Image (cartoon, rainbow, N blue to C red; front, side, top):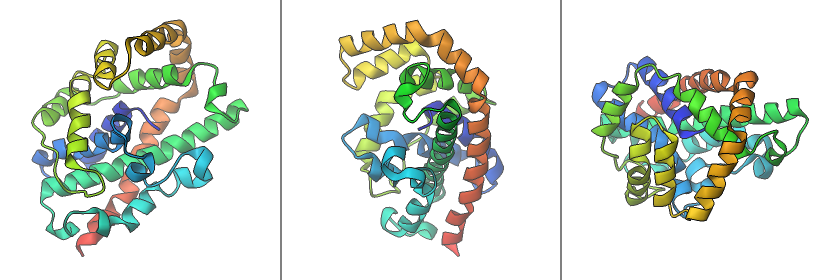
Amino acid sequence: MAPLVTHVVVGERVFAQLQRFDSAAYGPFLLGCILVDVHGFSDIDRRTTHFVGRLHEDGEDAFRKSCKNFLERLDTLLVRPWRELKQHEQAFVAGYLCHLAVDEVSKQSGYEMMQKLGISSLADLPVPGGVLLGAFAALTGKLHGDFSAIASALENAVIPHALAHVSLDDFQAMWEISKEWMMNGCPYALRVEMLRRMGKTEAQIEAARREREAHWDAAVAFAQESGEVERTVDNGVRRSLEVLPRLWACSV
């Protein structure tokens, strides 16, 4: 799974190429890119939000069928038919699909990286997975084109009620917990506060801090040397632009 900041960086690049929505839809689109990971902030099952399980559960389907499954179920997921949705609602759904597309290529990339390293589990990575994910997020955050425009769009955005498989209350709860962190470029200090709001104990937070401190430099070096940050963003944009037109076809 890609860090949330990766979804925002990809969303920024994809939205600029869509030419389908006006600027007022930018915030809802970015919210769609972010809020798919609501399962991490609630008791919702990941299969409900991502339409596929994990690599060890689904094999190659985990990075090939998430978008396909979402699109095949779209009629039952939307609160109204696609053509009846307002622009900001369509933008939110498009952002949601964009997130799934990025996760597909991220899983593919992670699988290829493990093969290259000759390992079969993320537990065998040379640095702890959580620290590595943080390093990828920090490096990806440097790829924003205009973060001030992103922050402005998100500040004024309202989560549309366009999808029925996750309640609006659950989406809003995730956004309330993560908004300050996302709006300020995902700094570590605000991440700690976000973890507290998620219910993590001080012991858990302290253990994560110590792990990060011990392995951070090695994680950053590994992320830089792998080239996966730029590759995941580029492939995420490509995959998103490949699948999004299937939504537009729903209005025909």
